[in-house]
Image (tube, rainbow, N blue to C red):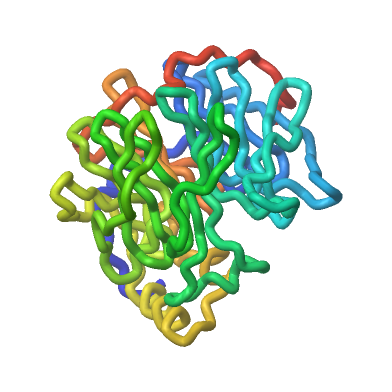
Length: 332
């Protein structure tokens, strides 16, 4: 391990076991945790320690499913962003997993990175890049990601030209859609209301060197928490766009290596499939938990469990907080 900067990791615990690429995490009032699980859709972690895989070893069009972002619907079913080459947005119910929407204006379903719902029941999703393979977009100059919306009018692209689109957060009350642009190392935002988005996206916060923002979530003070891969940091951005690091396990030598590869145009999968850290292993999403929403559970790309920590700031109840999910799946 190289030069390591650590902050606020002395009280980190973990939850879950045997997880595979647990990238996206959701919590509910029952104490259940739902997290994406490679090849198997979604894993359920119950307060008593029981765990269930909610899908079989699924394939779409002969290609394996690689779940990335997940969203919990009011009926207890899930939407799953399939980031494999099979692409598309999938629907997961006790009856199995199937294609829900291609998320494209063509017959080709691109790899979908993230999916979420808003208070109006609209479905928001992201496609990181139209490049195939996607690692051709691991560059400073490739900006062809987009945000899509599915509602009563159908599917349409509402923001494009983005620098590797990752998680998004619609905030109707605040009037913004926040957009994580991983290789832009920034969070953008665009005006949002019940009619949709308006105007052009603007930079909300530019993040420090090495901070490749992936997951984002609003806290109870309207600040935005950013989970950053590579630098393995949680960064808090206040409403005025200023930021501070609230948790980190940052290896400076690794950050130097990755940034040099990005400069040279040689960044590839190995830079995401490796992390010289032991606690935060490419943290990729954030979910608040606990009776006071004072715990943060981190999805990640490389661990087999989920880090849990506190940063002294509480979160908000997500829209799916009181959804009752029927018990199904294979124990593991």
